[in-house]
Length: 254
Image 1 (spheres, rainbow, N blue to C red):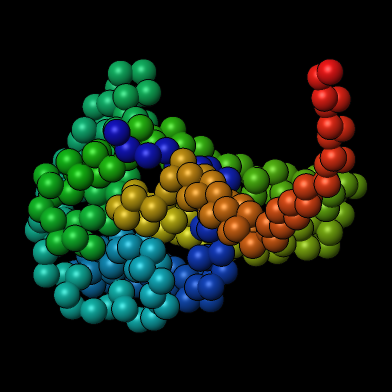
Image 2: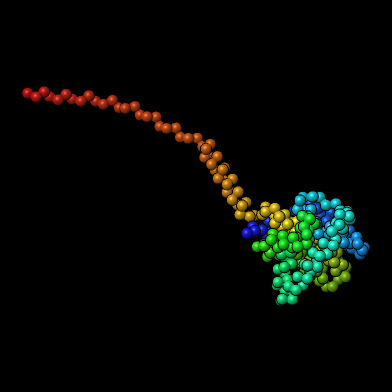
């Protein structure tokens, strides 16, 4: 049974990862969008973008130019098979009132990452993604939904504030702020994905039961050490026996 991830701890770590690589993630996203129309090259860049959560999870600093490396175009045939299997199955799932499609899409969310990071075949990547996400699907959905929902609330507030009176220049400022906020969401989503991927593949679950047990063990060790260091009370000195009064001699019997 897979360990349960902690949503709030995951969001916290994800934002921290995004902050460390913020500029690199923005640049790599812009490079990808600028070159997406170039045939053949766009296949390699798409596969490279799929590997971002794995690279971030390892603590690597991202070089934006890495998406142009030729190694990512090496297995494009297998990648197309993987995408075809995912797209077909998820599309059929959405035909059954939507929920099965959503569940499958979450279960296979890390198949492309595993395909690149672990050099797995298409079927193996799908099976492994389904395995590591088992028991955590709705937590994964919740973590990614919350970060997008939080940004959506901020965008709505800005639109409401700068849209008052329909003043053109105020609306223009609000639009610029919203664009900046949308730019922030890209690193944040990649950071959260990296945190989830690291936890699911390494087994080091943030806020998990094992952490609580470890803290309890540490606490017990500290308490035990303190008790050992407490000075022991010296045993009370034995009282000297009191001299007994000499017994009166019994009168001699007459």
